[in-house]
Image (tube, rainbow, N blue to C red; front, side, top):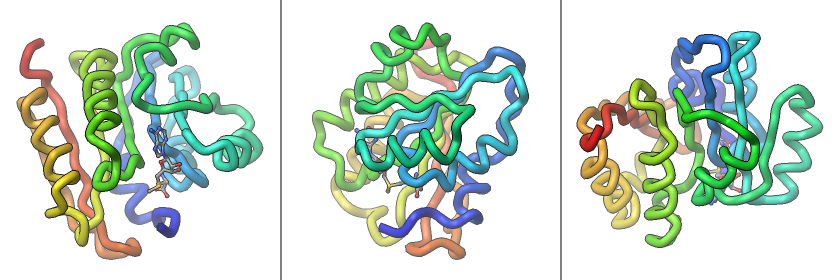
Amino acid sequence: MLPSTRYLARALVGRLELQSDELVVEFGPGTGPMTAVIRELLPPRAKYVGIELETKFHTLLVKRFPTMTFHLGSAGDLPAILREHGLPKAMRIISGLPFASLPAKVQDAVVNGVVECLHPAGDFRTFQYMHAYGMAKARRFRSLMDERFASFERIGPILRNMPPAYVLRYWARRDA
Ligand SMILES: C[S@@+](CC[C@H](N)C(=O)[O-])C[C@H]1O[C@@H](n2cnc3c(N)ncnc32)[C@H](O)[C@@H]1O
């Protein structure tokens, strides 16, 4: 897949509206198109950690964004990663993970970690490509999220991305 365009990055990141010391987590930053927008919008004392599975992307991110923190590992280990870095619950979780191709076990770990680590007033944002929106794993991910979160919005499709994609936003945990 090509890196996301700035149009999709801006739609996904939206307005961060963070206070000092509040945390934004990014899953799967890749080459950093979403990270660049987050960096522009991040208030000076807000916190950021990007979690990237691939060593080559992690190395590139550390070089491209020297003032930001990147963890080499899986988004499925979010609770342990936040503990390791001494970070609070996240006010924003912004995901570039390809849920339409992630195995069920990884989807489950990611969703459980998000539910555990998202601040009660926070939200989770991700995107899904239009052509993959109806695929079984993409639908599975959305139904897992629907079970755990009471509020959902879909933005788009964002056509100025290759491929075009929807932005999805979830908030208000059902069991909170
Ligand atoms: C579709 S790319 C998106 C990259 C970038 N955010 C963008 O929009 O161009 C998916 C990214 O997620 C990373 N990734 C896949 N599985 C992951 C996991 N379990 N934990 C963290 N990153 C993961 C991949 O290495 C890749 O960088």
